[in-house]
Length: 141
Image (cartoon, rainbow, N blue to C red; front, side, top):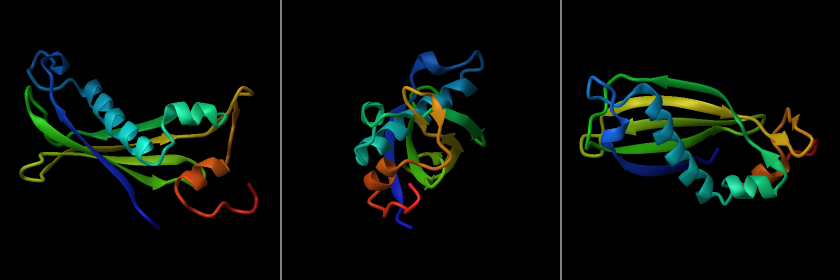
């Protein structure tokens, strides 16, 4: 399977810190979102294109591991990779120090297609996602 990946560089802003002067755990999700948006833009299926294709893609699952804390002013590289797309969109993330390559945080999200305006959850990814990924659309779509 081809690998779809995008990187985003983030400099940790002061307003993302907690009282212990490290990034508050909830802000890592924002960094994931920055990289996921770049990834979706790279396949021409960012949120406006999703909406225009008749689908919403809500996040239904989030998992994060925090082996090393991020600190104010730190430059990090956030990588987003599509890991699964047949029945759901699973994106893996890694936050690394760009100089050493050390992995600081990692996780994944799962998004499902919802047909709009019906609000009907799809049990298989719609043909448009296959097309954007350059993959053949299964017959049963």
